[in-house]
Image (cartoon, rainbow, N blue to C red; front, side, top):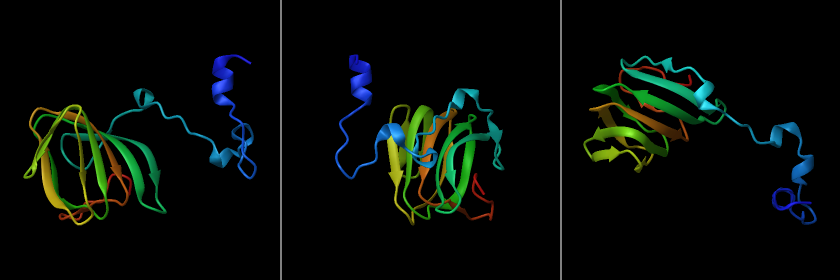
Length: 140
């Protein structure tokens, strides 16, 4: 067994599932965003790629592309939201998050955000946002 094979085949403690014998529903799922189409949202200048969504729990991971000047309208975070800015910036009253930065907001946080020069960001949500204008969340 070479080093790569050994690294992927650990000794499995008693009582643990063997990674080589996992049932299908417990295996990893590889998602290739580069092969996915950007889907226009209900908000002008914002498109998304849903990387993961569990309707039962509300958990989702979504890649967003915002055109320069695009606005995410007033909304409340129903639970923790985490955002990694990949390109560009996202601005709200608390400040600007730029490429390479990470920002999180607790449940109950209310804000409106915009991207002055465009952005690509990864948003991870524990529950769907609630928009003041009644628009449904991206995965609903």
